[in-house]
Image 1 (cartoon, rainbow, N blue to C red):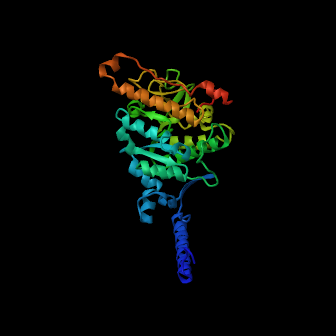
Image 2 (image 1 turned 45 degrees about the horizontal axis):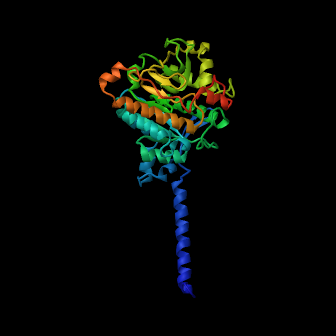
Image 3 (image 1 turned 180 degrees about the horizontal axis):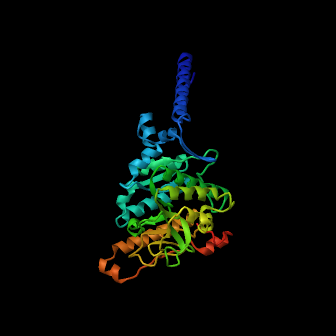
Length: 363
């Protein structure tokens, strides 16, 4: 036969490749190990960890070693500061691509003033397999948080059903972290870290949260909070509050966690449990809704009041450029000039209104 094999050789090769295919299939089933799962149950939802996901791109060969490494309690313990505080952010596939939000987020830590050392306390909570794979290739502390029957990998457009599910999933997960005894700083990945924020946090406060609009008094309950950045201490008061916050999604259906926080902050339950809330000044913890006005003071900058991934990426890159230019200036010039930002550009409240997003609900 022209270009062929003898019949016996052909049958032998077919048998070999068929056997190889069966072995590979069995191996994949083992790696996808749906049998091993760690659950933290809370009402209708659970925080799930699938150890099979780890083999997707992990260099570790032993399954038991890999499983132990990526269990939530191990990840948190390895990342925690001496006082039990961890920094948490969430990530899905849409924000995990090279050159996307997560790379800019990590870059801000590396070039910030006193922030590089905080990376060892950062845990990236991946919401899908591809985000988890990207995390373990780029960062030390990663955890896979899955939700049965829900795919969080795509861009979740603001106030859509998937967006709301993602936000409430986050609140329930953060509650479980508090119950495990860890304090946390939660930060959206589109928050740039330029200075150590711990220097500006209040002491003896259960929950402190950034603002879309800061009225000048950190204790003024009328400040408009932004759920994309907060610092919470683990105690009975904060745990009760997070349970109350999560359950309030049923009282206010169709609203996201930030709006619900804005509703329940007036609830008598807050006084009953004696929860101490403080609101963070936008001169230190700014955002596009209300930018910090002085780069000599800014700790974080959040690309809120912005619709769509491409708009966010555009303005995030400009924010990083502004910061790099600021760092390149002589110290005396930095102190004598009050510099601000070159944003918003593609991000603006006008862009939100073009998509029919209510201005009292900002991202």
